[in-house]
Image (cartoon, rainbow, N blue to C red; front, side, top):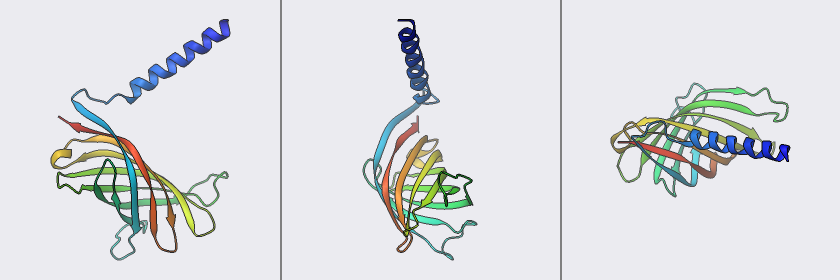
Length: 167
């Protein structure tokens, strides 16, 4: 009985902390969940001016109708025996609304896991740090997961997260 009560209290505490962590940082923000599919293509140099030689251009559909441009700032091999060949990257994203109501600026972190067969699974976390027009002062977080085909440079996957508009 005592163990069950402790387990219940622990679960309640975890749920409470999780609920508070999910709240927007400022009560003057309007937040909404977003999700949908995306596609992208790798942009080669010289059009890609990334120090890490990694840029993509893509399309978001679903809750966000937009195009985006990602530019890697860094890329390095991960020291992860569980994922040989994994590389980590950082960069920036510019997400431009297809409806013309502004852009979102994001700071990205992620990893790329080659499968040894010509493609790689990847995951990118975009922390929204601002924007223009409707999205001025925006915040939030988007997570995109997908697969990159090294032969074609095409990638596809899905995104989900939360976007908050400043009032």
